[in-house]
Image (cartoon, rainbow, N blue to C red; front, side, top):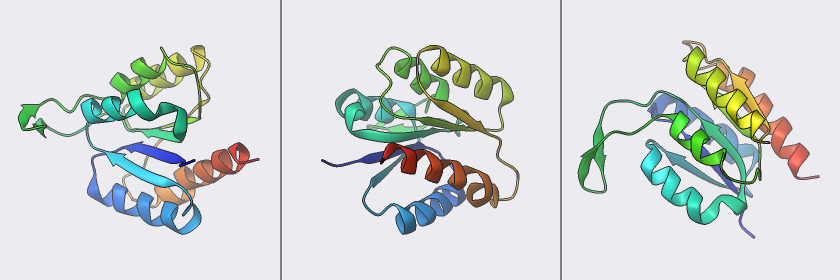
Length: 145
């Protein structure tokens, strides 16, 4: 059965670094990036049970074309709101500088039975390897036991 890692992220530099690290250590997983919540929600409604890790940013960039129409990309809170209504199937990492959004998502998910961890990004991209990826490895290796 396929195993998925889902990441909600809209910054290309972050995506590149995350993909590089994940591809090297977790080649047995399909890694899927979304830059908007409508498409991620559509995917989750069909594939949540096969998901082994979800990583969520909160603030996403400006409106963009989604499915041929100008659309609001939403926020990570849209995804956490959906997950709160579902059975917890995997850990969630929240990586955002938005402290209100980060805390709201983390505590709401935890209150709904999800294992949720929050990471505070720094302006330099190095946080992805020094903080985020350490937690990713810990959670995925724990889940594979």
